[in-house]
Length: 335
Image 1 (cartoon, one colour):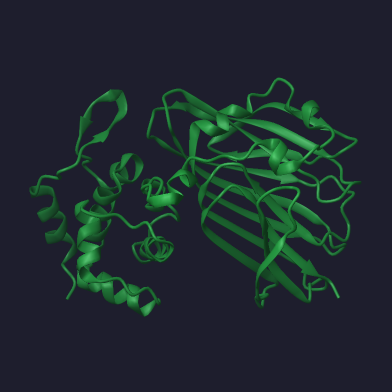
Image 2: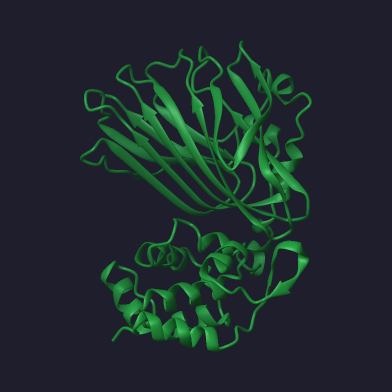
């Protein structure tokens, strides 16, 4: 039986929260609202605020999750909202994403507060490992040109929580635009930018045009017309504090020269908790098959991990969790 909203919120306000958060001005106190908890964390406090504010009981949340195919025990939910445990396994993170939908929260607003998985055994170094450009791309001509004057080391100053990318393909079997939404958490004070690098799909592809959408503005831009490589600084609205999570969006607009592409690959030089790719095809230019592919380095072959279905609206969806550095994405066959 669900808890009435008014009495539930009143009960929450009367009961002190155990954990405190870093708030503007450097002070530390318990968040006083759901918005504050979602912005500054910690995860268990934000989850507790969200569940109580919704009027759902923990049992009600357990039943809703089960209906959506996420069997989470009542004790696990209790541990999560009390900070005694946190969701780390892939199926647990998927359950948190489902809770965001059930609670009417913005996507990844809770997941962004989780942080990296705790180190365990021989895989403990995977959360901090990164991939060098040389290992990811190989001897890529033009790379020095587009990175000249740009400090790509800033990308290692954040924890990469989420990357959600929507790519639209036109009737000429070429891509027309990418819309990217990133969620990052600062690892130290003063982080104020991100460098986005675009690698061409084909040798005759022209460098794209970058357009900030929200949470950032355009800084320095470098491109190499001969190779199609393009790099752009995205300057955050404000410098971040250590532990602060930031969401920003930008678009890449294609400039031609990439007809008949059959792959869409995202390079992840750093571990990322959630990678979501959605390829939107035109109704009169649909692929016959599409696959999830991955490789760890430029000099290793791509592996087909799974065949992915095409939706009725001509979209292919790929969701990967706890992604290690490497090259990951989609390939498809036109005929």
